[in-house]
Length: 289
Image (cartoon, rainbow, N blue to C red; front, top):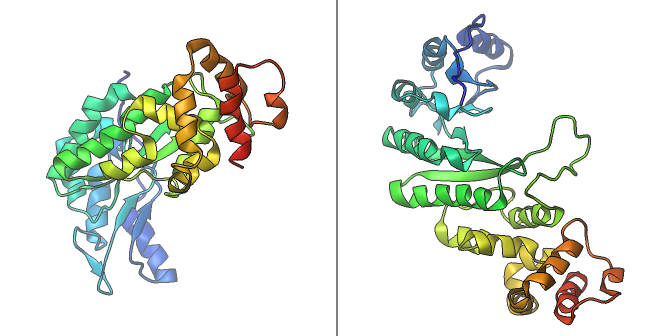
């Protein structure tokens, strides 16, 4: 991993900018900073000092309501030292926004989360990248890591899955190396009920994403309605789908995946010479509509 050097750019005093805005529009309750990487700034201490001078210290209120500071672009946890974390903890920052893009960063990420929680910053919003170079199982394990950290240290991490799409892609059709259209569609369906976030509680997480990485993949392959309306179809359709899917031999499973992986099912997919169990499984994608 390349060393990340601090950026030395001209510092625009935050206090002056906010005071100019307040002179025109009046005081505001919260402070949202669209900063690409505040922890890399050589003037980080000055930025924190300005935030405190503006009245956004920890516990500060505006019209009897708590104030919040939000570094909306997120913090680079690789640059989060104990000293910088202590400075952040003096402010009204809530939530702390981080990113967890690779399972290789699990140990470092967990260490930084524990540091933040020990300093009284348990509210964490973590962006979890998928459809990039990682596998679907890697994605699941990162989501589960957040849930387990919540149980272990009392943090309140909400995971926000972020689907990777290249900057030069004009449509949202990009499919990563280890992903398929069906798996991406499955994740989308899982997130519909919770409006894009992942529950921080183990019981609800396992109901949404499965108890294991293999069960997560199984859920993601199910027909849309079986995923979205989990309770409604639990015993009426989904149970039978699971039974047939788990009974497929290796060759039949490959035939099944070849048909559903890259596009939505159409009636014509049931034509032709397919194993009986594969046809039974495929029929669920038409019936579930």
